[in-house]
Length: 110
Image (tube, rainbow, N blue to C red; front, top):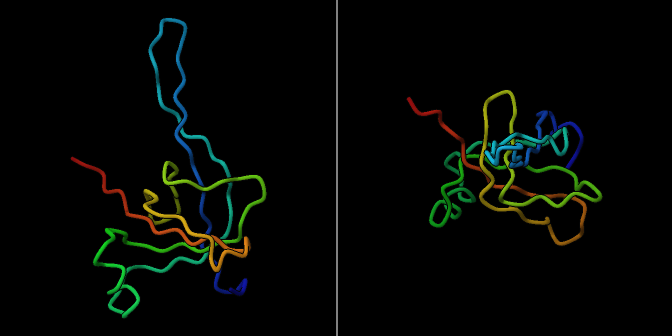
């Protein structure tokens, strides 16, 4: 993956639950990392057709591994086009160089 294709700025966010002194809990967003990534939207290629049978993902994000940070499905990705829930995380070719994340766009209700 070349740097030229990684042209989307994203934030990896984890949800943190904080309890106040009265015992009420609130959820806050904690930005884990702000990085550049390659983003590919869902379209009619054979690769996406194979993914469609088992996945509800709308976008694919590929970025360099971040030392000391484990990306999980409990995290969320945000970029200029919106917020995405992570549905799967994979280490590309198990080399520890790139992460491939399938994510589903979050639509606001109302």
